[in-house]
Structure formats: structure tokens, C-alpha cells
Length: 105
Ligand code: HEC
Image 1 (tube, helix red, strand yellow):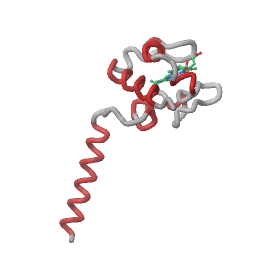
Image 2: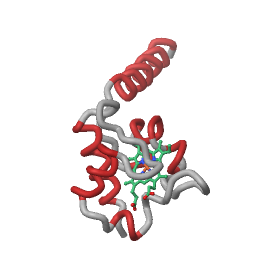
Image 3: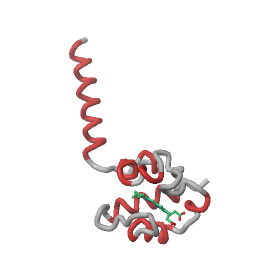
């Protein structure tokens, strides 16, 4: 009994470690730790935007924006949107772009 409980504990610990150690391409924008860490403070934890901060990233307008343009906005910034070149890797930015366009309904 004790041994199996220990095994479960080790498994969940390993899972937690591998889940946080790398930044895996998460399934959706809001599950992506890169988004929660860098973008949620302005665009909201749900990506729906916050008043006076950032616009919704799940709106028709944003999800219909071309991948190239989204990548440009995130990399180089736009008005009050800070640039993330140098803060995020091109791969991390690509993942964000894919997740934004993927949430198009
Ligand atoms: C300091 C607040 C702030 C942070 C942090 C921030 N943004 Fe923004 N973002 C904005 C604002 C403000 C705009 C609107 C810019 C404009 O068009 O005037 C914007 C616009 C955008 C747009 C364009 C939306 C559209 O439809 O035109 C995208 C895409 C975007 N942000 C993605 C991100 C991502 C991804 C991150 C995290 C890597 C992020 N933002 C972090 C404030 C922020």
C-alpha cells in the first residue's frame, strides 16, 4: 500500500517537474506559460483583453490577422504593446502566433 502511494507521489512530482522545466508548446494560448508570464497582465488571463491595458487576442479581428502581422506586432511592438524581440525566442513567438490564429472560431 505504502509503496504504491509513494510511486504515485513520485510520478506526479516527475510530471510537475517536466511540465515546468521546459516551455512545451502548450495546446492553447491560455495554457501557454509564456503567455501567462508575459502577456496576461495586459491581455488578461483568458486572452480576452483588459480595459485600458491590452485588446482581446481572441477577437475576430485579432484571430483573422495574418500570422506575419501578428509575429511583427509581438516582435517589434505597436503603440502601447511592448516589443518582445530579445525577451522571447523566435520559437516562443511563433508558438504564440500559432495559438492566437488557432483560436479563430
Ligand atoms: C504592457 C501591456 C502589454 C503586454 C505585456 C502585452 N501586450 Fe499585446 N498589446 C498591448 C496593447 C496596448 C495593444 C494594442 C496596440 C495598438 O494597436 O494600439 C496590444 C496589441 C497586441 C496584438 C495585436 C492585436 C490586434 O488585433 O491588433 C497582439 C497580437 C498582441 N498584443 C499580443 C501580445 C502577446 C503575445 C504578448 C505577450 C508576449 C503581449 N501582447 C503582451 C499591450 C500589451
